[in-house]
Image (cartoon, rainbow, N blue to C red; front, side):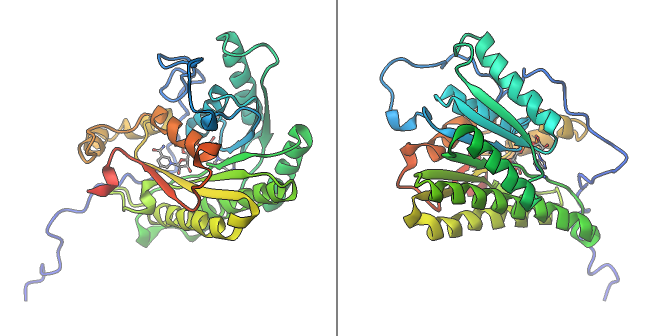
Length: 316
Ligand SMILES: NC(=O)c1ccc[n+]([C@@H]2O[C@H](COP(=O)([O-])OP(=O)(O)OC[C@H]3O[C@@H](n4cnc5c(N)ncnc54)[C@H](O)[C@@H]3O)[C@@H](O)[C@H]2O)c1
């Protein structure tokens, strides 16, 4: 038998490995990237529109909202009528800054009256159960209730499974799985105590259902599968307590960070687009309708569902 019998037919993929010495600065502070646009062609409507989609009167909380998709979700709620929003992120200063920026953008664009919306920033590591409890207590003290919560904070790392450092795998699960659970549980406790018909949205990923290639990211993919099934399991437990829990699974979304990360890998973005039936990667704005649907009363008979928004990537 040839010694090359077990050799792979194809050369191993070039993994998008993490080089600890390289840091990718988050691109700029300016919110001039897709997903952060709060004033665009569709704009606000004064015409007839389905009332159940309105976030008016609802207190919304988004974790990991200092930037990226989370920041866009918080802004989307404001665009849809919410006037009390809490931004949770790892560092207090980032959360404060994002909260102040959100208010000033909406006010300066004339979309809201001065003082009409309140946004608070809370520094909190979602992997820390006590910190999550304290953050939700602060929000309830400040705003009186919690109606819609998006557990969005999450991280991704790439290491081949054979080399994945155990402590990093634990860290990823602490944030992506346990952190999501701590936030969902705290939200549900407050909703149930105050008899609120609340909605909790857990941000999973299409990676809950498919394996990304060639990026080696087994813990991330498994964590997102856990998040998807966590939503279904919590939905069943809380269905008769008035709390709905669903998951939202985005495909490849071109956030400012994704842009910076793929930039050095020639052809990666094109290959993602090629594998997507719709022929492009997602713009964060593509998630706006989905997040409002799941967080609002429009989805009041939807619980335990996964809403996949990936341009068809995971169906082929
Ligand atoms: N961008 C995509 O293409 C994509 C696709 C599918 C799913 N997702 C999921 O969407 C979510 C947001 O992704 P993103 O691309 O906006 O990421 P991002 O890295 O731009 O933003 C994540 C935010 O979460 C915060 N965060 C990280 N760890 C935290 C912790 N322990 N406690 C509190 N906050 C913490 C970060 O500071 C950051 O502000 C993640 O759960 C991600 O897995 C993203």
